[in-house]
Image 1 (cartoon, rainbow, N blue to C red):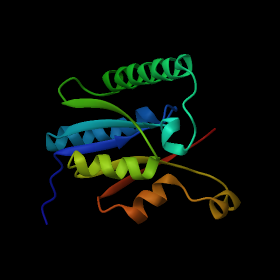
Image 2 (image 1 turned 180 degrees about the vertical axis):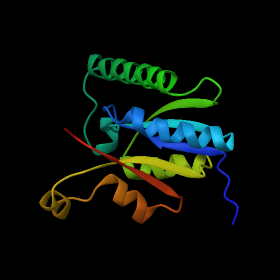
Image 3 (image 1 turned 90 degrees about the horizontal axis):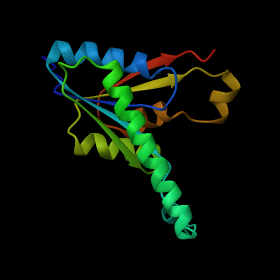
Image 4 (image 1 turned 90 degrees about the vertical axis):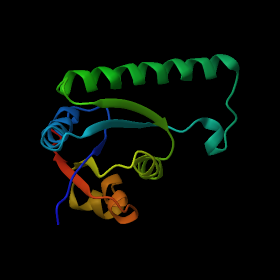
Length: 150
């Protein structure tokens, strides 16, 4: 089997591990001449979760927050990825697992890279992680990178 990656999607949070995740993506992209899609999933719009959106100033404030998050995502992408690599930063609202999987399908991603937070046994027993849900529900190769939280 000769695997080739042309579209690599990296799902990121705004935490210290983003550089580590993008480092793995960069190495693979340079090897396979692939495009990197850096994706961050923002909280869904209040209308999607059954709440009224509130007055216009609340909607304007949320729109400003999303614009700032997107600028931050673009800056991170530019900072950590080699300029030779074709890349794009996408900010999408929605439920994390479903949104990541839908976007991976739309982008025809050949590989999904995510961070995996290390937690205690009890924490893992009581809650399922996003990376585990992506593994269970996705049909795309998944590379999980352990994230140490000091």
